[in-house]
Length: 457
Image (cartoon, rainbow, N blue to C red; front, side, top):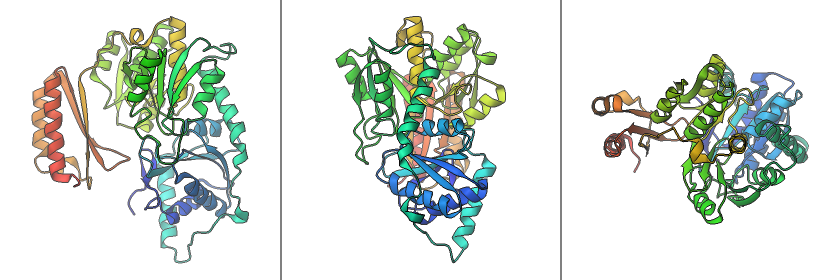
């Protein structure tokens, strides 16, 4: 059986393997068997139309294996991870979400009692159990016992608890009753899991809110909205005179920002702002920041000028977290806006990151462009090529030579990185250098070659 778990759980098209009814039900059983009983799992989901039936099937599998499943309803991924850490009676968390992907996709993300993604060994154990069930001629999908595999009435209590955590860790327990009074914020909830939590959070903090992406219909999650498509928010921020715009993705583990001038600030910008803020207060442990292979070279240079080292990992928040924990570092993240501060949470949290950035703005009295001054971004081009298969890159005819020639042309003026997505049938070509035309030319050449050899029609 092919490996089910990618860099961010199990992903696929809802209704098709591995998100067909049989495999989902088996996954619920396998989780209990692999992690041991008694098991009480907290479930959450984003707003995709496939979420409720996938959640119900998974919960039924958990129950069939002797476990218990409790649902928080529509909830953010980092919110579920926090609640699992906060409640000793919960042995794990599961989020039904495909994050920033289109609505037809969905996924199963599993968290340990520490609010962290499972280890490779634990994921392999679950896969072995699923494979064994697939071979069992007597295995069949069964509905939930007594028609109630979970209790969704817990959702409001969980929401109140999670929002209190965000406020206290994002702005400080002594921040006052309405610390954002006088602020005007733009918010884009991506028609996803934060469509209610986001407005509730910022409203309770006193901000005047102009909101987009808060009317989910099951199919509009991430559709021309949210952190991947911030143009509508940019227009709103400029038109309404907002102090800042905040855009999360479908499950709210990512966030990007719009300055009042309309300038977009991504995860690299947020890393720079938080790194310099923490360093100035003696709170950046080891003077190191963890990024990925996609982190802009300009950020590496800007941090180095301040005596801060950038450590790169493979793309994926689990790899960022591994390095953070190994080095005892305070801050890491990805250009997508997935930032991790392990002393607060081992999971990227878009709403938490937003509050931390707002706190820096409040304390310093500076707006976003001022805070990011000192970081000059290298021109970067990322091209996504949909592929029908993912053979080793070095086996693609003509590709190794083209890549070597590209790197020779760039020298020490830039970087080129080509990799397959861990969650989509996509090859990503990233090129950055000090000259825009060179970046565009090299990226197009490599992407065209991959499309010619592997592209879908």
